Length: 288
Image (cartoon, rainbow, N blue to C red; front, side, top):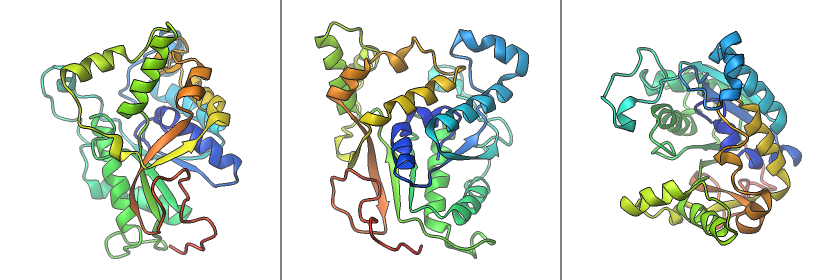
């Protein structure tokens, strides 16, 4: 479950590619088209001028899906935009009818239809803070939570065949321990760190400890190429010379070769820590 096209490439992409290689059916659901996003890579501006941002982002998403080998569905909601007050500007109302402005039940209904059709054993999404406070990320968390709990409730959401996913995970891509470890490794090698501003901000306003949230680490060394190809596919959002590629591949492999998750809810027993999103499900006939 992801809020915008490009989120699937920056959060859990190598894990998705790994499971596809293992024969798992992996479906990425994108809630909005990213229509209110900015062009963060000037090299992509001519394409946006020619085709418009919504069309370009759809094309980018198709290329990222191909790079990862996953299936993909759009929920079709309108991007809510990033509120100005989160960057110190004035508070403004959300655009009418956008993803974060409509009710959770209205936003969750098409996702529940997809869950009932696809019948996933495992769902992944963002934590209750959205990973960061974009309203679309928070709403994505809310409807994933709703779908996990109520995809088997025909009275609450009529239609289709009920289904109960077994496990729900939160992406923990940029947890503090990983950021500190990568930053230290870069400094030690006299490589400029893209995390310096983050750490300076954390020094001024220390965040709550999040080490306890990491329950599951999936080894993805052999699938980082797929992640990088998916990132590069999103040309409007990702500069190949920017921070997404500032950590050399070998440093990443040496220091932190996993993608990390928090097991938020589970209907099967598994032992923490895990190294597999399907821990507790291997060899089990899950009937939902």
